[in-house]
Amino acid sequence: MYRFLLSRRWAIITLIVLLLIPTMVRLGFWQLHRHEARVARNQLIATNLQAAPVPFDSISSVPGFNVPTDRTWQAVTASGQYDAAHEFVIRSRLEPNGTSVGFFVITPLKLADGKGEVLVNRGWVDSPGDATSYPTVPGPPSGEITLTGRMRADETTASSGIRDRGGLPPRQFKLINSTQQAKENGTTVLGGYLELVSTAPAPSGDAPELLPEPEHSDIGPHMAYAIQWWLFAALVPVGMVILARREAKERAAEAAKPVAAGTPDPDPEPDSDPEPESEPVTV
Image (cartoon, rainbow, N blue to C red; front, side, top):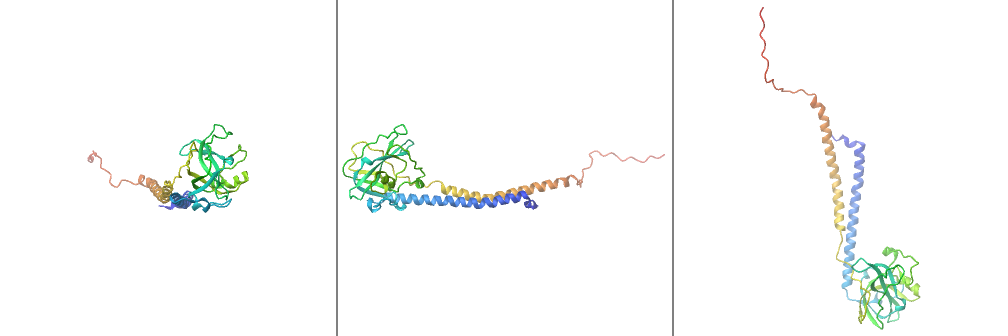
């Protein structure tokens, strides 16, 4: 009955199924690993945000320092004076909790201990309306300040996906990168940067819009996607069995049709009104 499974068509179907099943299983594990990475990232962010602030130089104290992953988003403190002369902006950044495109304002802070400067992302400002003009930026507080910020690693094209192209207007850049700014200004800039949370004393006038904490409660749909891929992998062979059984039934029905047409009725019904037998005629 199932000899048709040896046909070329079913050999191709079987080969496709044998390729689909491991592919779907691997896609499921890929989504599972993305889910686990998302959960680990959220746990790291929550832990670092809730931890007591530590001095900036306890994490980064040299130029070019690569902030380790487990220290990103760590709350840190730093004291010194803003270097407004070397302030710059980062182009094409979204407004916090919005859709408008504008600029991040980055102002170096000269550390009170004299070890160098640290870049501080003071927040977001709106675009001036054209592609070349420098935005209107509220000035940084003057004098000695102590700020609290979230520790961030230098942005690179590889880590951010943002292409760092040249030819931009003065004091406008695509990435927040301490090494780039050290070369640009000839100053000692320590590795990493800070995302401003608060300043003491508080600014008396306008200030850029502060960036909110990163989202760390949503685990995303990756686990659901993983389960879906595994269900698909389980259903593929079931579907193949159903198709095979259906084709077997159809072939059996086709084979039975000519046999049924040529078989006489074993019990024909008698005529409803039979003719009487005629008597012999005597001459």
